[in-house]
Image 1 (spheres, rainbow, N blue to C red):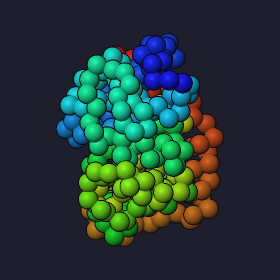
Image 2: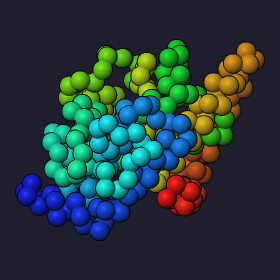
Image 3: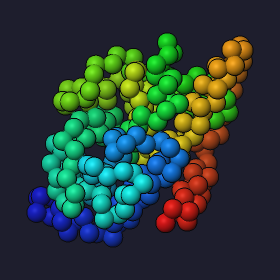
Length: 244
């Protein structure tokens, strides 16, 4: 598909719906305190052109992003459509995770409790502790090798390869990546990941020993959660009613 088709594709009803979902996810993340200034990005690949991505623009707080603010970029980070500029570094992580890890929706944040766990020796969440954490059992990768800001494609590619296809990646001394096949499912995981990390940080702060469950039980809870994602869709629908 030539680049000249980008403006018309950008206005396609299905793409407009994706733009609205991505904007809602950003506003919902801001509502729940998962953002950081005007940094970090959410992206989703187009079904019609999987190497083109919708992305939040440069300089807007997540709480103010609406459908018409979302931009369209290609895998090289070149802007194809949209009224706002794109942060040049935005796609170094996102393009690599879309391409190498094969993910449709990619949400990268520095949300506080998840980031706090990347600073510990474990580098991430213990998925055998809370029920909320168990939903991620077997779905998490750890990238313990912090290399500074992701200012080139090679660093994004290194991060993507460490994921080994996982839905969630904890980036040591940095933040997290949460991926999904749909925006609503990915956002649900993002929200509950932070809640699970918060529970672990609070439990650790008591100084009392933590009591994990057996890994077999954690795996069963993960399968139960992924076996029925209607709750994720209902949560996202409620956020649409709340946040407009």
